[in-house]
Image (cartoon, rainbow over all chains, first blue to last red):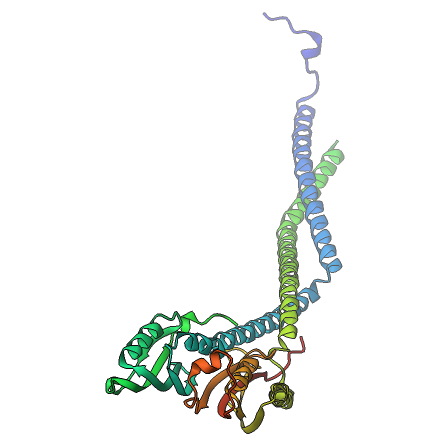
Length: 191
Length: 197
C-alpha cells in the first residue's frame, strides 16, 4: 500500500471536481485565444499605422500633381533637346558650307608659280560644283614646255586629275593650250 | 459556480468573435496597405524620374547655352536675312579700296539649305559681279573677297584676256596697264532665322 500525503488527497465531490476541470480547460483556451487576439490586434495596429503613414506621406508629396509635373518636365526636356538638335544641325550645315569653300586665289598663286618661262595665260575660269575644276588656257613656248607644265600640274596636292585635249600637242612651238584641273575635294583645307 | 462558468464561456465567445472579426479585417486592412504602398512606390518612382529629367534638362540647357554662344559668334560669318545689302556694300567697298571698278550684275537667292530636322536653314545668295582692273588688282580683289569675315564660296569665276603679257611680267611685278575683266559668282550664306534660344 502506498501512503498518500495529505495534499494529494482530493476530498471534493465528483461534480465539483468536474466543474473545476471544465473551468480550467476554458481558462486555458481563453488564455490561448487572448494571445491570438493580441497577435491580431498587433497586426491591425501595424496595418492601420502603415496605411495612415503612407497616406500621410502621399498627401505631403501632393501626389496628384506629380503626374502633371513629370509630363511638364518631359515636355520641357523634349523642347530643349529639339532646340539643341536644331542648333547642331545648323552648325553641321555651316561646317559643310565651310568645307565646300575653295580659296581660288591660293590655288592661282600656286598655278602661276608653276608656269615655265615664256608661258602666257589668256583665260582662267573656275567652277565650284560637285566636280570642281579650274580651266587655264594660253600659250607655251614649246611642246616640251607643255609636257613639263602638265607634269607640274599633276604634282599638285589639290589636283585630282589633269585633262587636256590632244590638240594641245599639235604645234611644236608657240603652242596654244587648255588645261582642266579637276579639284581634289578631300585636299581642300578648312578655311 | 455555474454563473462563473457561464461568464467564462461568454467571455471566450466574445474573444472568439473579436478574433474572427479581426481576422477578416486583416484582408481589407493589408490590401489597403498594399495599395497605399504601391501608390507610394509609384510616387517615389515619379519623383525619381522627375529628378532624372531635371538633371538631364539642366545638362541639356548647358549644351544649349554653349551652342547659342557658338551660333551668336557665327552670326558674323553667317548673317541673317537682312544681311544682303551689307554683303553687296562690302563687295563694292572692297572694290573702292583696291581701286577697281565693280559692277553687280545679278543677285540670286537659291533654295534654302536645311538638314532633315532643322527648321531654320541657310539661304545661299549668289551675287554675280564684274570687276574691271589690272591683273594685279583683279587678283587682289578675288583674294579679298575670299577672305571677308562672312562665309563666302566663290562658286565660279572667269578671268579674261591675260594673253597680252606673259604671266611672268605680272609675277615679277612689272606694271600691267591693260584692263582685265573678272566675272565672279560669289555666294553668301544667310541664316534663314535667328534662334531666339
